[in-house]
Image (cartoon, rainbow, N blue to C red; front, top):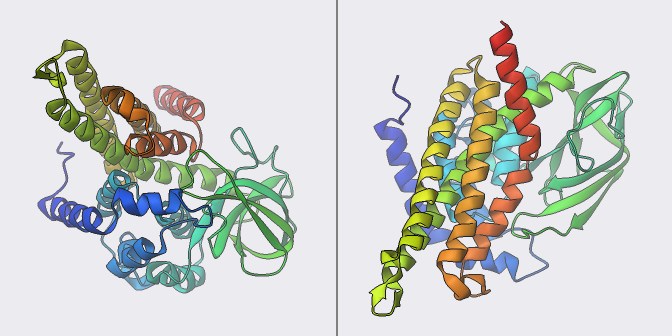
Length: 371
């Protein structure tokens, strides 16, 4: 079985990389990091919208490009490599995928076209603090027409125009679409280790909402959305991990100590080799996840969990060892190493921490073995 991307998909990846290398440099990332009033880089975001990437996996009948999930995976990898400081993941991986999975035909026709055009910036509001949200623990409630309660932290919740909220309804949970620019919504930015991907606390006080999907049946829908997002986030992490390895390798070749490149030292060689191995393990698992995602395979839960875990480990390790390879200067503000470390730590807990995904992987394997 061939898990590699096609020539067209590799071409798309190459063009995306060229675009981002010119239009989304670390200088653009630092513009957001250095300005506490900026939640994202608006110039980069507008150009991403113009490129049509938000509509990559949205079918043509709903106003998208209709390319598919594999194409979105290759774009996700390049976005991760560039540390793009934009609400792309929240809108394309979570909000749009939730609509595709659970939305009615009318909701898809109305909302997905606006996502593809950039008119809607979406977010997915499930978390209410540490732990894995489920119906028995949710405090945010939906009475059939209005949402009440607090969600925190919500990635890109301070700049999103719309949110899909996981809320308690009756004895179960439902997905609810809320216009964040409407009545009954209060938002407050939340400080994190990684300011270039903003987060917010969102308070709903009787905010008007429209149910997405069947009432009280959101537990399975939430798992499906997170599985899809996990694969796409894994590709972002993979892109970041590969870039860290490149940075470390380039520095090890150029930095001389005692008359020779530091890359000639065994300790540095071992760091680079272990980074490479972890990245390759992450790539293998991510490609497996991409296959399962694009074919809607029964193996998606285990593939998503494996991709998520391997890529989280690879990106964190690569970002850490990149700093170590750079030595004392790797810890300074001026060198870009810390930008990748920040993003690695953030993505490792977005959509659930590794502990949660380990439990998901074990559960998926147990169900498979019991079948």
